[in-house]
Amino acid sequence: MEVYSIADLLGFCQSPSFAPDQTDPALVLDLRSTQVTDDERVRINHWLGRRPIPVLALIDDHCPLLEGLDIALANESEIARVYQRICAYPQASAVLTQTTRLTSLLPMSSALIVESLAYATLQGGEAFSDWLSEHSRPSKPDPTDAPVSLKRDGSALHITLCSPSTRNALSVAMRDGLSEAFALVAMDTTIESAIVSAEGPCFSAGGDLTEFGSCTDVSQAHQIRQLQMPAGFIVDHVDRYTFKLHGACIGAGIELPAFAKHVMAHPNTHFRLPEVEKGVIPGAAGCVSIPKRIGRHRANLLALTGEPLTAAQALDWGLIDVIDDSIESSG
Image 1 (cartoon, one colour):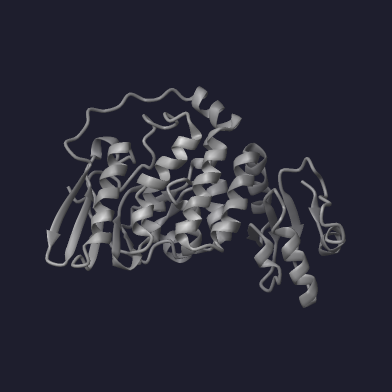
Image 2 (cartoon, rainbow, N blue to C red; image 1 turned 90 degrees about the vertical axis):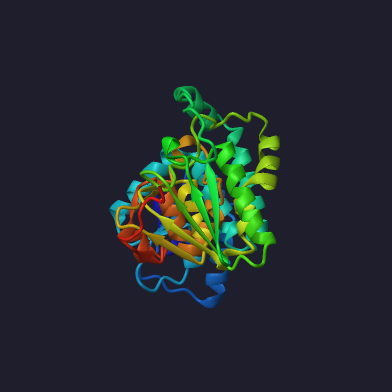
């Protein structure tokens, strides 16, 4: 792992098309005790923002170049750990960081389009194909009557994920049920609050692996996401939503709740973004909702490492707003 200094970086910026090592999957910098002029800061951040690979940096408390970084850490061993993950999944890591650079600058509705296009790029890639070939699709459990239930209580609408046998995985049926519920909230102005919770041992285990990768036409998959993904119906009405989480919140199980104005979690809740190790990126809006909650650097770290986050850590980062041990399964 080659680590470059601020002096190296200033030299790189003299040639906009120059890259320090065309074969390296990440650019690693040591920016501790860095001082730059305003002109140098603008020039460096502009150059870093155009790198086709993740930009990692060791920093101290007053780094002037945070804007151009994809991940900023104070510990050398943590940088090395993230670098090794990027080496294992270079394409997904590169697309992830390029995507979050853009989504952090765009209105949420536009950012969702960027995320979906980036996801489609990786759906057609070798890494995702290899992951699918190495993992046999599990058998699908018997369907429940309806994976999403609605209950009106005055001006509140209670939306419940009720497919505990699948750990409330985001199947096509679950996706469509949530989209219909969120569309109702968008259309009915008498619904002042929407409270989303779940039955069973966890809020959601994320994408339904019995259906994962079943749409082989990536352009069609992009169109489906644009028309039917639940995130598209919630982004303009986030102030009306409260999510109550418990147990595992994997992938979509935190990507959708992260939009809400209020996110509550039981102390046993844990969060994880496992998509990069499958050769893709968070595709249920996680490249949009999570950076807006916890910042781009931490969102990238969560996705690149794939490591779980406890409820206490999530509260500290701002991914959730409250830890409440009274939250239980809605079943």
